[in-house]
Length: 296
Image (cartoon, rainbow, N blue to C red; front, side):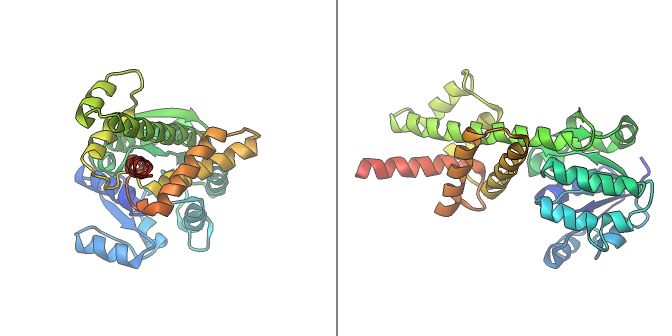
């Protein structure tokens, strides 16, 4: 493909995707609101712009990867934002995990300007972003998806079309509700198994083939056994996503008592010092609680 690409939001995920596209031979420039982040990436040899307008100038495709709905609204809708400065006909892929209402709002504003929008949240962490093995959930019309296909093939091992703009964000929130619940229950159960005297390696070996296994259990618990809680997906991001899911469910009149329990326990983990660590650090929290219980 010959279209030049801009990536707005150069955190762990955005920079990973930008590097993946650049390594594939594409002309990529990044922008991040953080001056420090921009300078660090420049020092690392990455082309960085100093404003959204500079980043999107002459770019046919723009990716946005941002931390929350407020950041998305600011980057898209504020003066100097994407809707104002992006040329008609540009294709923009919004990759953040945000609520469907925000996605529909920014998508409608962009469409009114003649900007083509794909709602495209991703499933996977920084390593998957860097090596192009994410799962992409896409919302938008078929023509826009066809144009985006070369980029989608570089970023993900698979992608699924959920429907119009907004539906992909809904699917992503549902996915994260399930994922965070899986990790929490696995952390609680695994800590109980080791407290009962089962060797952690043996316990993982059996459970990774048993009916209770999940993708996140198989991916994350080998690190938990080693006490490695370096972030692939930070605890605070998991708590944020569950809050978004609960707010969205409330707007639909849907109760989410189980999700509320998972979110509360993740909030407790944050208060107990696990901010910045991977969500599987919930396992360490349960182990510590178990040790306290034995000592009382």
